Image (cartoon, rainbow, N blue to C red; front, side, top):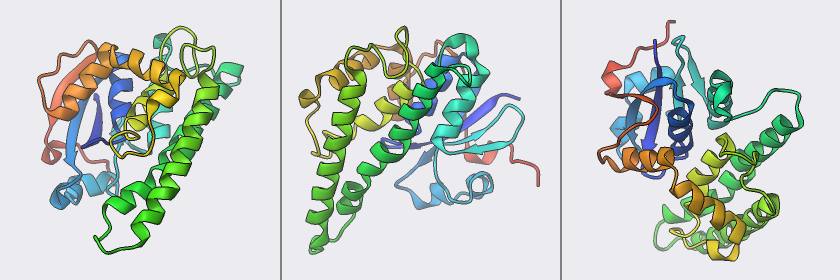
Length: 235
């Protein structure tokens, strides 16, 4: 049984898991959830896999559900050790990867939440301006930390190729400018890595998938499944 990833659009953090799957070379399928369509998020098959109706959600090759971006990314790296997406446990490289990925998954991702909350607020909700100020402060503080982490380095956790941490950076840092929270030009190391990622075939493939455009896989992509076609976990 091949792996199946449930991802959401638009601009979901599941972007990272699609890119990691493409880099891994593992056989996989995708199932799409439209985040702005409540019926899609409440589909019975999706809820059977993740009752929280959050993406990404993975059905592993063994048919078991695996939830949360960090767990999914580490799982994929471990299943494709020859691809260099992660590192052996107990090594300094693994510790750095875990630290950086944890920062991205918690602190950096969470920094955007007040801005998302503000975007959903009623026009007369005076809290929206406060939420945006909070997001601006938190996002810029996080970008400054990432700038320090990338000084003198080609990638966040590796010197030779992008890892799962870089995939998650690509998925989340792209929110900063559209939400008018930060200018990436103020963080040249971050901007450099993001620009390099945008030239990567796996990242370009992932953008095409999100945008619903023809996408040519150089990995193991086997096509999309409708939510009705998902093989539900036993029990």
